[in-house]
Image 1: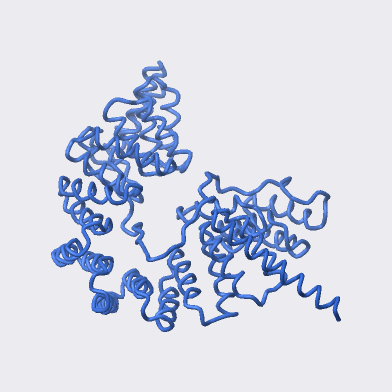
Image 2: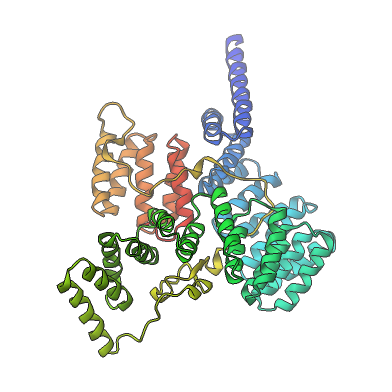
Length: 509
């Protein structure tokens, strides 16, 4: 009996020590390591809610929102009386754009802790995202009645009016917010967005400058201010803004793309090519970037490179006569008269058949025009790019943030020989079989093979990873994210980088 008591005491000591060590790792932002500690506790004592809670937080830090939601759900099953757990699961659902689910969680959180204004606020924002405008207005009126100096609530009230096309009321609420707190960056950002939509460029520049003085690391603020500055011919200031944005976020698509256009305008062609090279590394099939790089290669004398890029564009848009005309010019300069004449004949035929109207040629003035990122109209190839309307991210009231997932990765299957097993096993055989099937596009068969591998070896991280990508490529995103989360949990940390990239990309393949 004494021996049994001693073993129980030792196990308790070990789990307590693991919990402390895991929390220390979490504090020092070593999230992947902390997951390993919390997983050991869960394996030993799955009935404790706290390690599930802590592991959920760590996964959230890594942008693994699917895995974080699963762990938070298990923690809530074990202890449904902790309001912070509803908050955590709510914010994971927000990041996955499951606003209805988040509303349910914040309703439970408010019921358990009605004095926490962040819970009320997050629920109101979710109602706005769900386009439940009347409920959102009522919610915000309640918040402002309880906390009349809570300027963020005034900002969301203004944004509600913006979404309802009432910018006059929105401006009134923003003025109220500024009177309460002139140092709230979100207020100035929202004022700037109204000015940008109205093309009041000087006002937008002023408001964004105030916002960036308060929040100097806000990348979108620099990109938007650069847009305003281009339109008031402050090109030096715009270039500086793009440089700062890329110092903060070196992988930012919009900053690289728009800086490439701006460098093209000021004649810095070689460095403009560098920007479009980077854009095409991120999005190899981006037709607009390909065409802009082709123009730059053409201008710098790399005619073969220009023809290669022009040809890719023309393959996608056979009647794009500006591309045909430019490629024909390159062929003539290389003495390839026959190919040039073929392109010129295609232009003439297209115009005679009235397939195309007369297309505008590139001009510096077009840099002041804008197109949304999803707008693939080749006539707008030289227009600055802005995010689609639904890209805006709100500042929810949350303490959770993330780190190691920022590593640059490609969304691609792990190779056949990646298996972590030292010796061939049935599991590795199924893994190799699944990888080969996935490479030829047989995702259904690959998923079955990877499932067999996982049944043989439940800790085969690479099988979870590749099965996850097969699910994603088969438009089963949630199942895919769950598998990638499991791969990361088992120690394949690059899975977190892939998940972050997938969260940003609509079409990963």
